[in-house]
Each structure stands twice: as structure tokens, then as C-alpha cells.
Image (cartoon, rainbow, N blue to C red; front, side, top):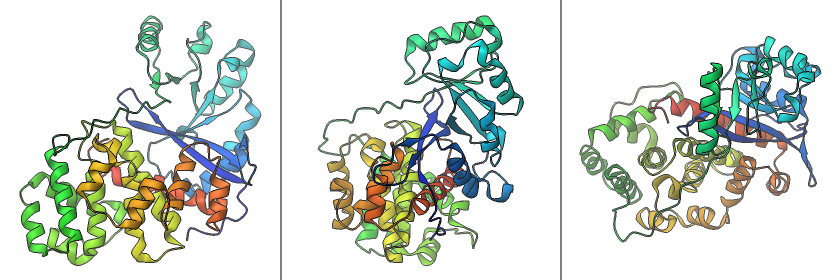
Length: 392
């Protein structure tokens, strides 16, 4: 349980902000009013208070490291008191072309002087007025169309502007056709699936260890994941046998699922890995207070595997044919049904506009505050796990 936050006024939504290499460089946050008929809201103060409680508790430090959050705002200096609970260096304020006018320049300067980044959204060109251009730190390039990128590159070169280009529209890569064998999978992915099958069959740990020893790099990556800060302080795990002793087969299966998500970088964009890690943890935390402790690993696998086809670049049916997951897990992944499905659907809603979040959380007897706490805890955890891996 994350605390009872029963007075939360709405649901957070989050979306990754990407660089041109499709790596996560921040998160766009928005707010939807609670209630069955809730609408997208400009309740900036309520959203910031929620974020500060979980990401900057007591002002003691930003839990996302250097990762910033992006908010849509108007060019209005009166909103800055609403942002005081968050460190300005970790906040980028997003304005539209309608605010990039000389009349709004004092307000925009005021925001920049207080340390906030400033991103221009929904625009095809930089402002003509040089004083306005100099205030912009980030520019929304949507899905990164080549024509827009070339034009911006030329404008930057001519004006000497240090500008970060941000992709706000992540275009998914098409999945490959059904394969009869493992041709679509990397060798590491195939080995991880084999290990997961061995765990499900409860094979002897010595046989599992022997199979893992065929890939020293995979062994190293698995142990790095298990020993990452996200698992918490404790005895450092030095071997697979030690991991089984400390974690058990079920929890080790979960870490292999996490490793599988990062094993086929050639088939998925880097941000998809981070998205899968965060979704897996969010689904786990959403169900943690309602289901038994033994369900936690299944909940995590449900969240991770709901994106496994996009991560590996193969159809879901092929992956599920190789890793025989429990029927309840498969039902959640394929239909959002069964005991785990509603938690997955709720996590997905918060990745969009949260239009169904109120209904889904009410069906699960969860408050908006509990949902927000789970999402933000998952965000922090995904950052910590990412630190144990090569940059996504």
C-alpha cells in the first residue's frame, strides 16, 4: 500500500519524451479530473502537489535524477507559485505558438529567469523574433519528420541556438510476420526463453545454471539486474544458484522476463524497453494491495509481456507459444480479462488520456491517489532498473 491519498482530485497521465535516437529524456505529465465524467484538467497545483509528494518528498531530492518532467502551460507568470514544490531545473514548461508573441515575452523571460526550461509545442517553425527564439530550450518535433528536422537544423546553424529537439509522437515499428522458427529472435532472446521454460518446469538449478553458462554476457547482465538498487539493499547475489536460494524460481522468472525485454534492441526502439519496465512495475503495484504476495511476480510479467511482441519484433502468439505462461497471465495479456487483466487495463489508461481510469479504479475499489502513487513509484523504479543496464 502506498498511503491512502484519498483526497486526490484526479489521475496523472504520463507519456515519454524522446530524443532523436528514441531514448527517454523526460516525461510529459497531465491531469484528468477524478469522477466518472472526469475531463482533462488544467489543475496544475493539484498535479504538482501529487508529483512533489512522491518525486520530491519534503524537498529532500529529486528521485528521478536528471530526468525532467514536461507540463503544458500558458505564458502566465502567476502560475509559478503552483510549481514551487518541484525543482525548476527538473521542469520544462511547454507553450504553444499562440504564446510565442512579443506581448508574452516578459512572462516567458520570467519563467526562464527562475530556472525552468521552455519548450515550443505544436509549431512548424521557430519564432521570427530573435529574443523569443533565444528563450526556447526545447522544440517539439512530433514524430521527427525529416523535412522539419532539416529545416530546424538549418535555423539552428544560422542562429547558433543550443536547442534540444524532442520527439513527442512515438511511431511504433511494424511487427514482423509469423515465423515458423526462431529466425526473428536474437540468440540471447532464445536462450532466455529456454531458461524461463526450465524454471516453469521446475528443473534442477544445476541444469539451469549449466544452460546459463553458455552465455557469460547474459549471466553478467542477469546478475547486474538482480543486484540493481531497485531490488533493495541486501546481500549481493554472486551466482545463479545463490539467486535461486535468495529469490526462488518465481522471482527469478520475473528477472528473466525483464532481461528478455532488453535482449532484442535491434527490433524495438529504446523507449519501448523503458515503457515495458515501467508498465510491469505499475501493474504489480496496482495489484499488490488486493492480491496475494505470490501474485506479484505474475502481475509484473503481465505488464512486461503485454508489450513483448513490440520489444522482440515478433507476433504475440509466437512468443506465448515459446514461453508457456499461466492461463491467468495469458488471459490478461490477450484480452485484459481474468484476475490480472483489470490492473493491466488501468495501467494502460494512465499511459493515455486516463479516460477510463476512474471507472477502472472504481471497479477495483482503488482511489485516484493510490493509482497515482503506483504510477509514480513505478516511474522511479524503472529509472533505478535502467541504471543497471546499458543506456536505453
